Length: 311
Image 1 (cartoon, rainbow, N blue to C red):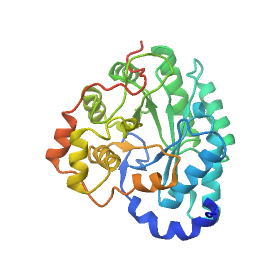
Image 2: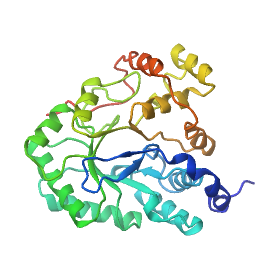
Image 3: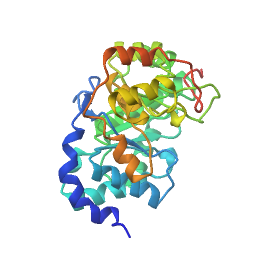
């Protein structure tokens, strides 16, 4: 019988953390924090043991970034794993990045502050490192009020940085036209079933060049929620070719592509060995010609749903 995550922890943490130093500065935040560029996603991880174990395994393997959300209903499991890891390893809370997200946009900014407090209580944490507006639903006025609530929470110290998720160019231009106190630090681009029925992702087969260029022009860091294309292109000839060239797995090639483009990437897995394998990407980089070729593979691939085109 294998050791539990907690018993495995002390032997893991000392040897694995140095490989995860690659980070991205959030230039739009007043304190300009650095977010670990590789994280673990927990969307659709089962509430309870599955989420707890996957988070703890990731932290043991050297990950310092867990991406959760109110919508996922497992914030408490993420926080439990983080607190357990801190207690057992001695790694300080300041070295672990926890993201969560607002489920429902609010007409009243105070509603956002209240939602953040509930999320923190569930997670058992004093603050979140990043808080995202999960989607652009509600229209420009609701988005503006919701974002104002995020700015208030940022100033209160409830969160260390704020951003958005699933926002298209129009959503961002509308938001910035209102001259908010803070510009979003991050736009997490992900498949979602929140509202609409047209596709969204951020990987070689859905490159979203217009959105990428716009965000880069505003110093909004892009975060790729599904860098592995949900496994649908692991056997693509070009992915296989590059895996052979670099002596890496298709998953590692796709993760490295996101890292080399400057994205934050948060592949999801609930399997301990895959969590470790997904992190084995810091001993190589893709050549520019390979990055350019992968970017040219864009086919607007649908792996789920999108909301970047809602009003």
